[in-house]
Length: 383
Ligand code: BJ8
Image 1: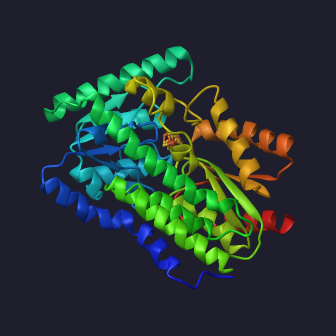
Image 2: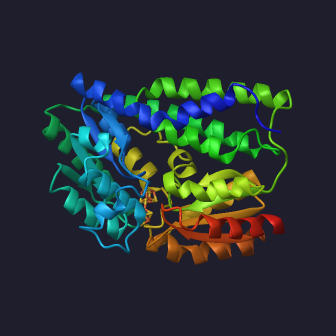
């Protein structure tokens, strides 16, 4: 059964949020509010929020500027890196244009080397991210939190107090809790919404700057979804798919669309647009705000960690909670860390849960949609 109510309009509003925020950022900028552009889930938003800055995501996910990027960058590079660099280079991304400072982390090789070129036309601050979740690693990332606070203070001529950071931690935690409550609705079988609709809210909310209001809006949406569900307004039962791997926004959403157009439904995202960003909260009871931030962020199970046990911990929990019938891994082309780690994911999913696993390597073009449809529909028919 399709949703025939006001919900699709609300999902649409979230889906349009990125575009609508272009104007909003300009208004904030005109009011003198600093804008910090970021690329990664390891970025500790709370420190920038503590000084009242507006944090905007700069990862671009369309192939519109890839040709421009390939003038400077190798063509066999991840499309997310090329697209982001291309939008910056051609000044086609308003968020990049309005950013006063760009912050990157030393995650994958392609991204960290690309930042060196970005630094030629914008101020860039790099946070050194350890590749291991060890005690030394936490200590090092804690020091990086302090170095980042100092960089903001000197770049913008402000003072950032621990109390301000603590308040920002609380606001972000509340937003995470709200988003988590929303995606947990997908534990229901049949599901209350499509995976693409869920993603439009998860992704769109990252472009809302009124973080306290976001949580309230998400809870209001949850209430509406629950009310409609109890009236029997939900989708039919269908094969449930869990998505993992590289970020699935923008051009890569073609994989999610292929699943949902071929009779399946995406019930969960174990990636940076989904649970990687929301699963763990920052410990508000820890008197050491920098330590609490370092621990929470470094715990993210991205494949740039080695080894990467936290990804498997989260993936295992999600398989148990969302009960997927199969796992589909999206790997962006030339994303070596996710691509290499995919063998472990395949073994984990097949050996521990006896679930089918499909790896889809793709970019932001539309050239492989036919092939993706064929592979995905074969998977879904089998379920
Ligand atoms: S925490 S997933 S946002 S690094 S897809 S650019 S890894 S080659 S985006 Fe990522 Fe942070 Fe990790 Fe998340 Fe490199 Fe792979 Fe491209 Fe990637």
